[in-house]
Length: 288
Image (cartoon, rainbow, N blue to C red; front, side):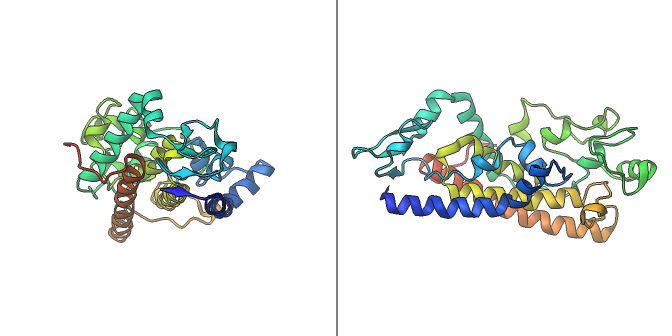
């Protein structure tokens, strides 16, 4: 596929405008030093700044004509015509072979598995279980004793290591399965909210190999999931206008699972699109 300069610059402009709209509130807060316990996560945990998010790329193998200004951009190689460039998946694989393999494994294996929907977002509760202090400077909605009681009344079923690693020492043995970094590909599954948010992480790491429109779709999924993640958490976020999903009740559990299933569908579709854009083929899933 080849895009004329008029075509690709129009897409780049539209992408920039969309990205700016998505990050406008964060940028306004950052300008005054204001912190937000829900939304800052999208720009700190994933370490991808608004300026990076607004930069459009066409995706692997798409030739940009008359794009000399991108000739020295990372993972771009010369195209067939003078002055044209192409994001090169092979260049990425040569420079970062372990990362390329990890991303492919995580995308393929996660997309190939059935979702699990019985965790009810208790990972955030496990992060404050029996703790005098916690990471977020906001009060607990049920207080310390009430929060601990919710954890003790449920089985912890976390499958995502990057949530599990923040469990308090007292919560770690309560999880159904012990998790480690090395066995993360064995446990990741599409029902997990954090696995859904990590679709955005993998997209950012692939850089120009991912079409900008797809990157922003993944960002929007991460944003939407983050809201539910914090609504279902034990924190009192009323001061920020966040209504809780009370997962300690049957009604709250039902709402959580309904939205969790919808996010799983969106995440699975984006994983297929990422693999297709990056590797030029729809996935023939590796064995789980």
